[in-house]
Structures are given as structure tokens and as C-alpha cells.
Length: 291
Length: 320
Image 1 (cartoon, rainbow over the protein chains, first blue to last red):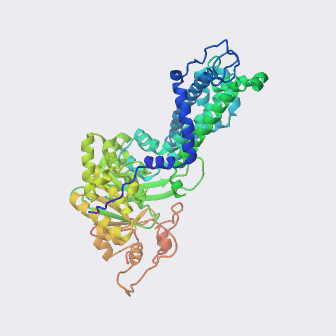
Image 2: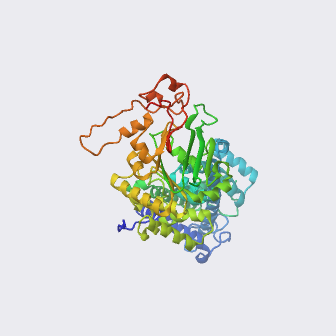
Image 3: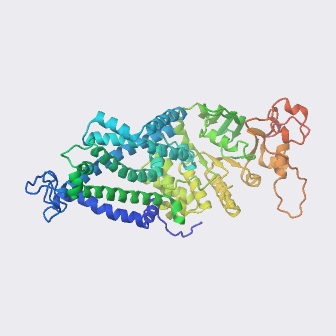
């Protein structure tokens, strides 16, 4: 017997997690994001004002005990709108990133496992999708699809999968020739098995990092679209269309709380998510242990 | 003697360049024919680039052969549809050279060992786990390895896991592709002995690919000598080492270091490199490096001719 008592060591995911916890910036990002997330998800349980309730005795009032973040021009509570806007922004970002993850992975898998001709034609399509100028495409798509939550999700997810599909394809092409995948083929594995038992687990780092960074990007895209009036239409609140108020000089100069809070929320959330994304990227890279 | 378990006829593999780029066709294998009798160990030796691995992988159709027949239990594997081939795959397993690349870093040993059984289907989770634990015991690894990851093991232990993975499916044929060349010499002996014990105990048929002639002599019943994708000589192990008939075999054998200090044997050194399989020499492919080459060698490809019981060589110089 070669029974040697080996020191127990964790699996690859557990080791990634411990690297993540050791990353200061990433943990700070998580500390910022988690309270924001909890507040956004539970605000209607503890905040007395609804986002579209109008208080006619408090138009354009600054922060007070009743309205912590003040009120807007028609007497709506800014904090309630901010939190509801966070819900919409995160919903749009989350769903559109989920959609682009699925599309990106499947297109990448198709290119990597579909053979030379499928690979060539798919990747040329991806190249085409990547050369389109994003802002202009976004405007065209938004003007065709219209405004509202579903069209905004559609537009954002349609724009963000090509980069991911390239990364997935590269990873799967490399993986396909690895011995343990050849071994699985030698045992009779079908495409489904190769893709979901070997492909997906070995792409998980790409997918998680991409998803995190892309959520930050999608929040910004949504804000940009809504700011231009092509995203989430009023009276529904979103961080973008709240910033729209800053277009008026009067609001910009005299009712600072109406745009500063959604602006700060946007910056904080995006920054925090980016820190987390960078932390995850380092956590999934085994070489970062060497530093 | 009953029919051989594996019978290879005219196996040829040409790697063609992609449709979008121009380049030469690489002739990795040309017209390779041999038999592997049931329960025997056949060795495949040759230099790097001689096509050893390509033969192993073509037999299991891990690379698609260009032409030729691979009869396994009488069925021609090259003619099978993907679904039919999938059913045959459990009977033939592959052991890889590199124990670090052949195990998935994201699966536990238990998952690795049950993977093949899961793919082939027909067993419950408990039955699969039992079979995997038996395979683990057969390669003399502790049972608590089951829930560990591959990175927790050394090269030799990983190679044992690779062997256990092949055994778990209860195969008839094992293609072992340089199973010890990536290991330390002390570990090599352990793994070779393990393979030989398993082969004898389980009555396995094995195609043993190696460039280490000493290991091949120890474990193989028959040896096939390859050069540039063609068979140079086939002989029973003892016969080949005692009476090599092909100049290439002689050169290979004379390169084995002697364990006796001061033993000055007649060494026959080959000069130059193996020619490119993209542009092989005409006639006998070995003639460019052969000390006995004559003009006639360039004219025609020498056929494999019987020169003794079970002994074949592809050389037109009968006087050697």
C-alpha cells in the first residue's frame, strides 16, 4: 500500500473563496454593496413613503426628519425613489447579464465544438457585432424596441455577449484538447456531458468575473439610456431617469439632493461591484497565491 | 489459437492542413497492420514523431483514421456510427502519459472514477461508487482518496488514479500511452509492476506504447518497432532483443545503456534526425539514416516479410 497520510486540502472553489476573503478592496466592495442591496430589497418594510406618493406640503424640500434625502419637484420622497430606482437598475442589470451569459456561453460553445466552418462563421458574426459602435447601436435599438423595463433589458443584453463568447470559445478550444477531456470522450461522453461536466465548471471563473463586471456596466448603460429618455420612462424611478432632473439649471444649483443622491448611489454601486469583480478575478487565478 | 482481440489492417492517418491555409499533408501513419492477441501485451516503440501515440489514439478513434480497418472483437471500429462506437468504448480504455493533465482539477477522485460508469449508464449511484472504490483498491491507493482532488496527489499516485479510471469500466483492451515516461525512475518501476500485475490478474490485453526499450522488454510479449509512421519490425520480445533483424532495431537496441561498468559494446549510432513526416523519403523511410542502405532501398517500400516464427521485418537486405 502506498497509504500516505496526506494533509487535507480544499477543492478549487474553496481555495478561490479564501483568496477572495484575503483581498481588502474586494471585501470593502462587498461591505458597501451588501447594505445597499439589503436596503434596496427591503425598503418598503421600513420606509413610510412610497416612491410615487406625492406630498404637496413638501415640494423641493431639502433633507429633513420626515424626508431624509428631501423631496423632488412634485413632492415625491427622494430616498423612496432612490431605493425603488435601485431595484429597477439592479433588476435590469441582473436579468440582462444573465441573458448575455447564456447567449455568450452557448455561442462560444457552438464555435468551439461545432467544427471549422461553424466556428469561422460564428466568430465572424461576433466580430461584426463587436465592430458596431455601442452607443449608436444602443440608440437605434432603443428607438426600435421602445422604452420600458423589458425593452431596456433586451437592448442591454443584446449588446454585451460578444466579448464573453470570445473568451468562452478560447477556453473551450484549449479544454477540448486537454487529456482529461479526451479521456471523457474515450469513455463515450457526448457533447452534453463534455459541455456541462467539463466545459462549464472550467469556465466558471470567466463567467463569474464577467458577470460581476458586466453588472456594473449594465447599471451604467441603463442609467445612460434612461438619462437620454430611452430607458425606463417616468413615473417609474431609476437612477438614470432621476439624474435626468439634473438637466435643469435650477435643480442642479438649488435642489442638490435631487441628483446628488442617485449620482452617489450609482458611483458607489458601480465602484463596489468593480472591486468585487477584480477580487473575484484574482481569486480564481491560482497564480495570485504566489504573490 | 483463437482470433486476436484487436486486429489492425492498413491503418493510415494523414493530417491535412486546414481548408483556409496551405501546407503539406503530414503522413503520421502509413499502412500499419498488426494483431494484438487476447491476454497479451504488445509493445509499440519508436522515436518521438514515429506515430506511436497516433496509432493508440486512432485505434480508439480519438483521432479519426484516414483509412484502414481496426477490428476489435471482430467489429470494425472505423465503420461504426458515433452511437455504436459509444457502446464499444467501455471495452477499451486509454492511459495517458502526463498524470498532471489527465485528471480534471475540478473533480474529486470519486467523480473522476465514476465518470465513465455514469456516461455508460446502467448502474445506480451506489453500484458506481462501489466499482470506483474497487478500482481504487486495485491500484493500491487508500480509500480516503475518494473525496480528494487530484492536486493533492503526487505524479505516481495520479498515474495510479489514471489507471484506476481505466479499470473502473472493466475494459478488455487498455492502450497505455507512455504511462511511466513522465515519472521518476523509482516510481516507474512501481507503476510498471502494478500494470503487469493487473494485466496478469485481470487477463487484460494491452497495447503498451513506450520509447523505453528496457521497460518494453520487461512487460511486453511482442514488440512492434515503428519508424516515421511505418512498421519496421515485429517480433516476440525475447526474439527481438536476442536477434534483431532490422538495422533500425539494432540501432535502437545498441543505444540502451548497459548496467555493467566498462562494458564496451559495439555501439551503432544513428546520425541526423528523423525526417519530416510531411516529406518522407521515397522507398524505405529509414534509408536516409541506415548504415546498410543500397540504391534499391529508394525504389520501393519494403514489405513486411516473415523471417521467423512471429518475426517480421520490413527490409530488403536479407543478408543482415
